[in-house]
Image (cartoon, rainbow, N blue to C red):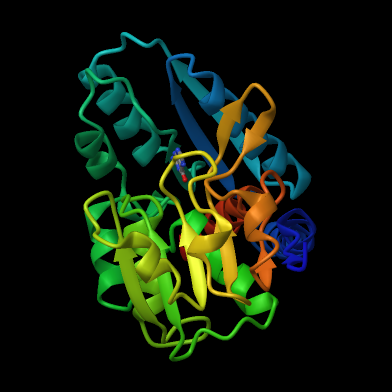
Amino acid sequence: MSATVLDGKKLAAEIQQEIAEEVADFIANNGTTPKLAAVLVGGDAASEVYVRNKQRACERVAIDSELHRLPEDVSQDALLHLVAKLNKDESVHGILIQLPLPDAIDASVILRAVCPVKDVDAFHPENVGRIVQGNPRFLPCTPQGIQQLLIRNNIETIGRHVVILGRSDIVGRPMANMLSSRGIGADATVTVCHSKTQDLAGITQQADVLIVAIGREQFVTGEMVKPGAVVIDVGINRTDDGLVGDVDFESVSDVAGMITPVPGGVGPLTVAMLLRNTLCAAQQC
Ligand code: GUN
């Protein structure tokens, strides 16, 4: 293995420390505590873990959080009713609807119902549009975490070729918009690859920075990577051997210049950015 491992856990702890200080200032100056309301529908095991991690992180930086649990068979109307209540609740600054939602619920309807100024995931069409126009209110948590990882490790993006594997609304699309925008940690030349892309390896081999978010365990192997490239693994796949990413760490770390581990890479940064957005939401009120 020759690649430097990018320690997302350590960086997330540093960022959380910064946020904790800003939260303390906010509380001292405003007499209110930022609050996140999380909504968890059904009992998906992975979602349970993610939401618990987000709540624990809130506690660590003294952001209040409340969890609204709804059963798997909750109606769309009942969920919309809860969202409307949280929109009106002045003590709530940020609203997070944990995805995925059950198939019977149209997630786009629910995400559109969240008040855009409380939309700390940046999933509302107004917030997505603002990102596309280069005037973001919030940046979505995982792409924002990756951008911070690049900036804080002095990884150059200006004019570099960033290849993103995956075109999801949560990671791939917003990441492409952010990195191709003007500004710090951006100004890149971006290619988005997906399941219909031809000659995928031919494209990934051209990447200075390769961001992998396709949900297929250990899909990217060493021969798909340019020597010295920076490889960011967004995948979290549960296997009998524990958590693995979308990148085959063993073969890729022999070729890449830098690589994120799974776990301990992008995941903790996603959580830190949720805290950042919740504080931002409170500051905008
Ligand atoms: N499910 C997987 N990733 C995310 C995320 O970033 N936000 C929400 N709300 N749900 C998710």
